[in-house]
Image: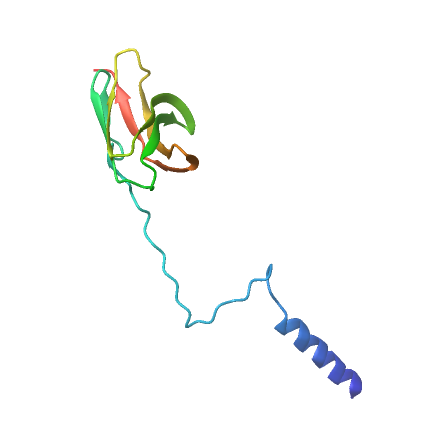
Length: 131
């Protein structure tokens, strides 16, 4: 009989101590909020197409307390063009393209806080093509 009680106690201890990496499951009544992805860019928008030689408006919602930002064009995660370094974080910039740039539909704008480059925003992908 004592052996059965010992087995029951061991099983009870194992069952009640099950946790995954210190994770304790939440009760069914607990709630949490998932916020939709915030889009900081007004322009360029996803899948916008611009022609070589066009002025590309870059308009965005201010995303950090810094008054100074760096602005880049990236493609597949790599900086392709530096548009501005240490420019005013005023929500607007005009990229004056020319006919010598490479065409692509994989461009994105990256705007980073000039004093903390780990704080940045990325636009959706857009294109720059020949006329």
